[in-house]
Image (cartoon, rainbow, N blue to C red; front, side, top):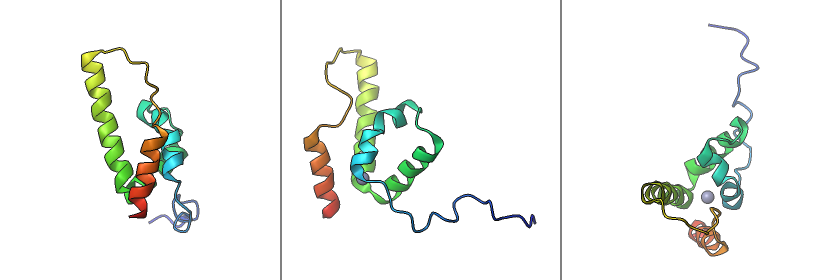
Length: 95
Ligand SMILES: [Zn+2]
């Protein structure tokens, strides 16, 4: 209906590279807190759309957080993914 469609977002994204699993994990805590800027969040969702290991990881992460909240156990573990896990995800991606 409207003729001015040049500013339609998303049209130039087809060829853009996806963020890496590493980048995704770097911003995971912001994503979980809902504090990720909209453009970054969009990159997240794009990556998750093509990366099953990261989808699985986030599912597990959410479950862990939910359990942690109900149990209220103190933990000195950082929220960030350990190197080992990142390596595992990257290995899984490569097949
Ligand atoms: Zn990934």
